[in-house]
Image (cartoon, rainbow, N blue to C red; front, side, top):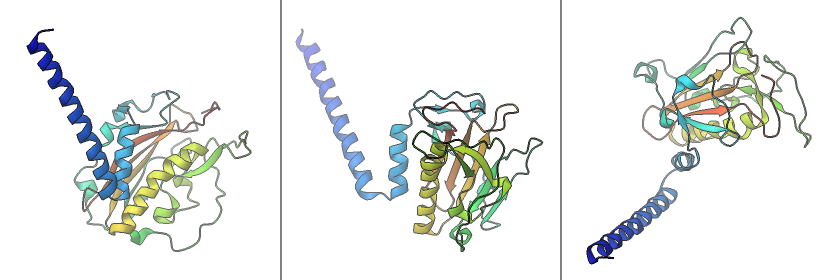
Length: 238
């Protein structure tokens, strides 16, 4: 090996070491100084290796590994008008389609929409509701809120409920809803939110849901993800 080649290799190794040290330092800085939603987004960016355009969600197939994947590099796609606070806090639901399926739910979330009464049991059966038990005795399906009860208090609203697997609803949708609730409680700011169930053709059970959120007054919270409506070890009849 020539002296120049050896020197170049040594420089490359040194650069890799420096890069690794900087990465570790940046990670420690985030975990030690940043609020929980920022830490969560950072961890998600490490775990969710797939990212896809929104237009491909309908016929996307679950790979058996990544139940949660990024959409549009995890960046929300709200327009300037959609982020306006002119109307304050609000929520809106799509009318059922001809197959009685739910459509996208939208909201401008704030602490003033938080529920003030205890939640009661759900009794509305969304499309595709054919309950089964898992091997561990738990139920396969949940009546899954599009906009979680903890965010607006919306409960037995047929336009806000879909048939979702246990793993879709909890932990996967719940953890994003918890991040929003935490952010709102800490800041009293607002979060623009959209939940879109993805149905294929005339199927009654959604293949998954797209969750998109963006804080309005600052950049403290943002995500754009797709969660497959699947349950490990079971084949869903959509």
